[in-house]
Image (cartoon, rainbow, N blue to C red):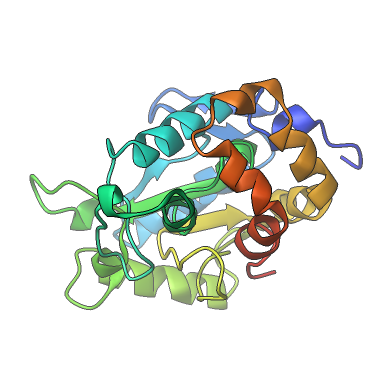
Length: 232
């Protein structure tokens, strides 16, 4: 694992993944057994460990990014309040999107180690999950689940999963729903250098990225504040 394939880091391959047909989700093959054990443990505690998102490919992330730039998907400020994209400059749009959605090629979801999770037993009927802070705050539908998850991580009963975006460190906004398989993600994260990020920005697939010039002009800041800055 010392020589990580850049296609894995960039989300341009599925060679490192295993597919769970029962829930239609991909996982890093070395994390899957622990995920299954964590899910079973949660079930024994009355929780339906529902994965809303796991692996996302480069193409998936590119589509999300471009649709947000074009106003086809909502974008939010750091407090989770929706913004009017038509009133924002290209720099403001990039900054706002990257608070919540990674640039394609930099998303930790590319690795198959990251999960967005909620408690299916607490999911209100007919409710559309948005994955915003209020859902995990007091009176939110997943507050109790979030508290349970905190406790499992603190007591080291989370099968090597942790929350990389638990606190606001000035980069990616806190995501109470996002958990990461530390045994693998920590190694990938360490190996993803600024030089590799610059290689990504010159990749032919990045030519389709909306506001690529803006991203390139602020590449060092984006890398330092929105990729490297998270909980160890």
